[in-house]
Amino acid sequence: MIGSLRGMLLDRSPDGGELLIEVGGVGYRVAVAPAASAQAGAIGSEAFVHVHHQQREDAQLLYGFSTIEERRVFEAVISAHGVGPALGMAILSVHGPAELKSVLATEDIDALCAVPGVGKKTATRLLIELKSKLDLPDVDLSAIERPALVEDIPAHLEVRQALESLGYGPDDVRIVLAKLPTEGDPANLTRDALRLMAEGI
Image (tube, rainbow, N blue to C red; front, side, top):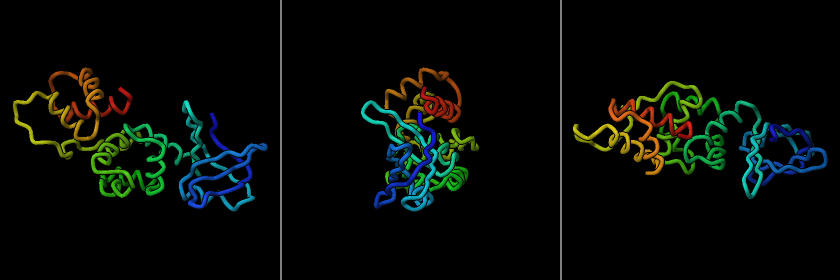
């Protein structure tokens, strides 16, 4: 796996989203956020980026970052449910690592929704999952909007509705519910369910 690249900057895409870095006679195309692109320097100069190397069946993709912390936060973001590298780069393009942690710590849903492609449900899910992945304080699940429920509905049904309102599919919900106690406080069970989701069930 490629963890970093140091070499000559041969080219930069017009939108600043990709660098071409030559290392040992081989040119590597590296997707970057605008800030990392600007910090890479001028064409023809030496460039250095920390790299997240993603291997797929049809391609090997490189994502570059100015610091190890940026890469660590990116990897935490793309490990969240339903978040791919493109959305991960979009999030870091709008909010750098320190700003993103501040957004999460203050539970600023509107700031997350400022990222193209992130709606309120996705933002709420990201808020919950990323706080756990980045070792930030837990979200108060009692503040999450859920459909009104009558008092005699079983706890699992409340958890199911909460998860579905956050965008999780029925198969994932069914699997995680099978791992939860049948009784308990719905907010605590929902928190446990989200942690299991974040761990890949």
